[in-house]
Structures are given as structure tokens and as C-alpha cells.
Image (cartoon, rainbow, N blue to C red; front, side):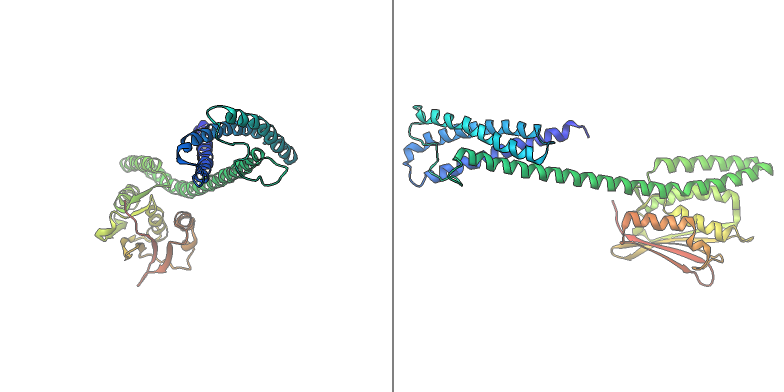
Length: 356
């Protein structure tokens, strides 16, 4: 945002408050006079009150520049500036009132006291009005500063929140990249160049997708499965027929919004601890359904030897998923780890059901 934008906004606010405040003051004077002044004199009196209010606006605008000049000074100096500034402005205002009332235009209007008694006998009405204006000015100024600091605090918190999400997301990629490069290296050593080339191509597609999608984004589940397939294409080069994937999505879940690349670390966890450790390989089941009207349940399960007490349940991948879901949804989510019967391990993610 441009630095001039907040300054322009404050300037507009000041003049809106000026017009509203002095306009209200003129209305109060007119309503007072309606009770005892004949109707034929009211137009003249309204004109005089408007001229006097315009003078008040000019004088208080001058006070504003004075207060801005001493804003960074000690409180005592600011108080002195307020009292002296109001006194000088009131002494300037009083002869102008006399000038208006002595003119033919305002001959029937008394502006020296407005028929009111000032809040002390020692303070003339002009000084009283200017002091009240000054108090209101400082109250609004301090309120604006409070709001500004609150906005800065919220922005800092949001930036920290965003940085935490990015860290959690990108912490996963080096682990996956390390495994993939190891596999490519093995394929090259055994001279499986076609497979190595296919794996490099798929890896480049997956990394391009990963870079193009911000970790703060949410995507529909159908799109998320498309990105997961890029990852699975790489792993199928490694495991071939040993890796079997079965997907079961309820129709209403395909357009449900999920954090981008939330499935890949869950599937990677199953491949690492279930498929890779078995000579026969295994099967991974991915399913999604509505738990209730407001909840989406996503389950990734395998038929490996894992259990909820197994180290897989506290690995880097699941820990990052847990932390990332906490950052995005707070307490409005669940991450449930359980054994799958007759064997295996499953992770169920429950998040709010949302669509575009």
C-alpha cells in the first residue's frame, strides 16, 4: 500500500469530522433560536452562524497544525500548547464575532455569548468551544493510533502465520526429493536409462506444480488428486506393480476445498513404511466422504505393518500435517491415527466442508 494512502485517508477523515462537528453546532444554535426568534429573522441568523462556524473551522485547522508540531514533545509541553493555542485562537475569534455582529448582515445576532454560560466564569465561550474541540481532537487521534497499532499487530501475526505455513509445507519437499534422487541414481547405476529419464521428467512436472501452488492455497479435492498423481507417477517407476492405489471419492467431495498438497505426505508416509518394507508391496486406499453436513473426512490407509504406536505415527510428515492443519483450521479439525483391520495403518483427516 502506498504511504500516501493512509495520509489521504486521515486527511479526509479530519475534514469529515470538521464538517460534521461544526455543522452539528450550527444546527444546535438554529434549533435553540427557533424557540424564541421570529421566523422572518431565521434566515439571517443561519447565515451568521454559518460564517461564524467557518471561522471556527479555520482557527481549529490552525490548532491542528500546532498540535501536530508538538505531538512528539513531552506531555507537559503538549498541554501548554493546547492552553496557549486555544487562548490565542479565542482572542482572534472574539473580535471577529464583534465585527460580524456590528455589520449590517448580522445586526440582529449576538455572537459573543450565544445566550449560554461558559463552563466557568473565567473561560469565555470561544475558549470553551476550542478547548472542547481540542479534547475531541486528541481523543480521536489517540483512538486512530490505537487502531493503527492494532492493525500492525494483526499484520505481524498474519505474516508469522503465513511464514509458519510455508515452513511446514516446504520442509516436506527435501525429504521426498532425497528419496527420488536416490532412486534415479540407482536406476542410472543399473543402466535403466529409460526409467531414469521417465522419473526425471515426472519429477520436473511435480516440482513445477509444487512451486506454482502456494501452501496457503486451498484447491478442490479433484484437483488435489491430480497433483497426487504426479507424485504417484514417480513412485510407480520405483515400485512398478508392487504399488497399488485405490481411490474412492463420494461425488459431493470432488469439489470440496482442501489445503494444497495435503495428500502427498500422507501417501508418502504409507509408501515409506508399508510398501517399501514389503517385498510383495501393498495397497494404499484413498477415500473421501462427508462425515456430516459440515465436515469432510479424508482417509489414507495401507495394508502394511504400521500401528498407532509405531514410529510412523510421529514421523516428520505426519507432524507437519498436524501442525499445518492446526495453523489453517485451529480447533476445527481432527487428525485421527488408527490401525486398519486385519492389518495396516490409516490416517483420517477431518476438516470443515467448504466449496468455492
